[in-house]
Length: 405
Image 1 (cartoon, helix red, strand yellow):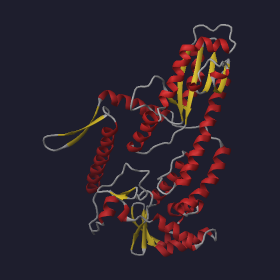
Image 2 (tube, helix red, strand yellow):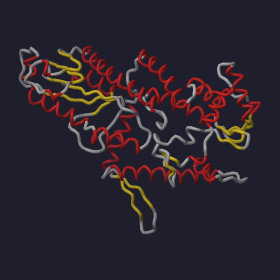
Image 3 (cartoon, rainbow, N blue to C red):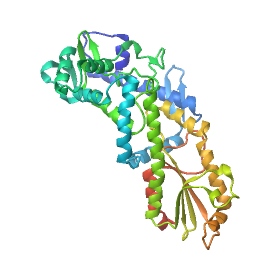
């Protein structure tokens, strides 16, 4: 709603009533749902449908059985949303590097940028602004700039502060631009390739004044900080070095999660626990193409072999990004098929592997496979033959397993 109004330069002295706002919110919500369902229809065959009635009313429909699956997914997301087990040493190391790459990518000092967002969130002087709405303020740009510089007390130059202020001022004419190309509509789903968005640049310049909302500024601060911690940027255009660094950071956690899960099995007293385990090291008869099992654990008493494939993937904010991510994961890179080949081979050769590991009784072992991720994810493209669970879900499953088996 805000972006459309800014792009069209709609200015009037009419004050919007609550009924006006309710109508606009309902209409905007319908457009967002329509946009999301359009992405679903484009990427998947059966999740949702768009129906145009004889009265030219556009309805969005979903399959009832699929709706039940979505409800179950939502329950899992809210119950197991704690993500990775964080490592302070890894995080501190990469956070310092992120400050350097952001400076190289967009020319701003990251700490000063966050300080500016904090300033507009709660530190600005009440004496130099006018409250013009519910949590909306207006003040002269120069006065706000000088107030910010005074609070920073020499940490930042006026030129650097002005650069941050200008960066945060939304350019109305670029709101429909995505990946350097101007579209005829607001491409709200193209989050990564759309760097001019009101949520990213929430300062509105009106003549020599700035209009801003402290809540919006604080939300932007959280999006940068939380996003970086979760290895995802608010946008990726012009952020090549920072994106590469976040990939390295993510890879560090992909290694870390292997050791964390290995330790969980050890704490639960599993008889044999290995990480990055290659069967060809047991015997040359095993094929080279098999690769390694990220975590391999044996429960002799219950005759079970647990194998865990560990993946750390970026979190997403739109249906478009989610489907693109799933398409890469399942269709392009075929990560599920690679793991399934390792599962199938072990199922066929479980007794032989157990014997090679030195166990006296090696007949009748079952294979229990899991793919473990830093977030909840279900395959929307195809049926897969093993569960995909979050780290916290797997820890709970392992801790309960011996009693259940």
